[in-house]
Image 1 (tube, rainbow over the protein chains, first blue to last red):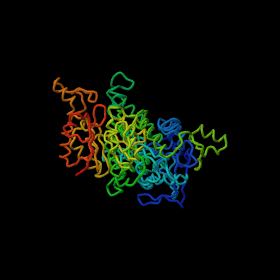
Image 2: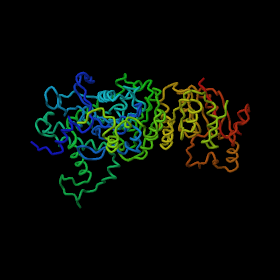
Image 3: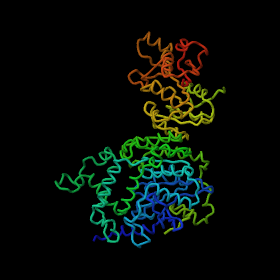
Image 4: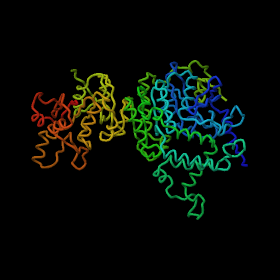
Length: 424
Length: 210
């Protein structure tokens, strides 16, 4: 039996009692999943930044990618790293938190406080493990919609996200067109490709081949399938980059040595880098969650829900779309984005599309890519004008708060002025 | 018809004003090769047009998006095929036809996607181009066609008469045509084609499916 590190114990505490806002849904409010199961009870962990205006018109929902979470613009409670999208979201950023009320939820099936396979199954008092029902992108979006209902927000100003986050954006626009004023799906696709399903399957098999996985019961048995999950992450990480970016960053450079060692040591920098990616990932992510969330992406095929015609998913939609892809992204290539754009055009939708030239691969949406911010910033500003949102920080809910609390809310963006959920 | 002022458009693009005057207010318009979106913006603000654009350059698309326009990065040769029939009232192609790989196919798609097509193009039959070629014996380089033959994006030049021939070939009919002289003023209305073909520096055609 392996010893748990301090980090992993902390991670487990995040599962049921996260250091985020949490909204709990009891037996009176079950979540009907695509697989036919009613999930109840369940909870959604989320972070908010900025202030909801008095008309509740300035809410922005950010949907996170496969292994990210709700901590997009604050220090991560487990790793201590800064938020994963501070380039996009924050004061003066394209998604300006002085102007917008930004919400980010941990997705269904994940492990940072929203119900997933690591959460406690109320029927057994043990972690769900593989008894957790299979979830889909649409289920994730349904869960988010329930949270948005609870927050009393009728229509979101914007829903945005990259990769799996972009899938949620497309699903939001299809499922709740009247609740999405504008949508920004980035580096994503309306269906997961065979190649991407194949990569995911490699990752899942790596996890399940680890003897410490224990048929998914590793939490109770006190083991961790770190090797398997690490390998899964290493393989996946390659798909997030590009050949050119890997070459630029590492080339054939050796790691802290003058000559090859004629062994299976990490002689090359790129090996060392990947091992580090794998090892740091297992400290913050649950192996079963990885199985479930990758599966959700595999099942995603928006057109299939609309008789095979993607255009029908957007028929009559008044949402303004801005679709973004990156030239070197081979995981979600531009052709995938174009398919979405063509469907939106066929449906008579309002759509803009930019393919940004970069050699940084799929991960470009998370990086400092000025063209991305120019495009998104321009789109968001124009849409905000069309919605009649004020360009200056609005006097909304925060004006009613006592001074001391308002200051605290401003210091720590994670502590939102509109606290509807309970913390911890 | 009211004269439309368009301060942000350079004098060399007065064809855009002529184009704009051909568009019925409140219609749906696709502008192919919309550049920085000046025409689309003007059409939407002053004629209540529901506009969409296609533009090749990322910088152009970004400018359009920042103006609140709906523009996709793409190319007349490859992207028109994805649009459904009758999606627009007008499909506009201004000063781009001569730069397309397959002008006939592009024009056919325009007339399939839109009930009407508006095309503006430089007239290669203009007297200055004729004299340039006749007396210097070299490919003409003018202010409006400023590229040398070896690096020009304009790979399919035509004259006004050539274009009229293509219109017949794709089974369309000319609803309106205007030839503009060097200063951008319309060449004498009701003049015969041969006259336009010599004195029109550029032409704007409003076409309709037969």
